[in-house]
Length: 180
Image 1 (cartoon, rainbow, N blue to C red):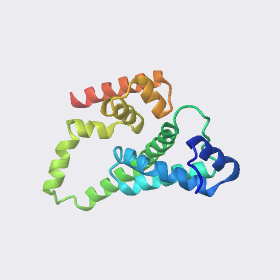
Image 2: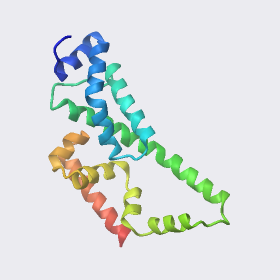
Image 3: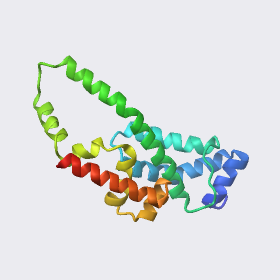
């Protein structure tokens, strides 16, 4: 059995030689961790599994290149979290359309669940958070829920620190307006 290779060695072997064993080892090291992190941001296990697969496929196909800057886990997180934001952004319009069609189909029937959800949508924090754009929500999650500093959130999300500050300010303003 060969000795354990570093993350950087695995990534070089994948990029240079398309080394399947290196890819499998990297996947075994990080897929469970990435899955757990993404499930903290998205309750849909199917979407999370797709994002994890897409993240590692991007590495295998050479679409994502590690530049030897920072930790490999942070680099993987940036790829996965960006793909999750993209998926959530794309699903938003489809989800709203499905909800609108469902409401039209059952216009006369108002269930207890619908009444509760209507209350959630009008004036509480959960509803206001859902209405934030994925980019603003990601910044709030990184800085408020995960407790990261501005610089750490910037590294994690792959955006400049000034953008983190601007998005956090915009998110707080939108939440204040929604809750007023």
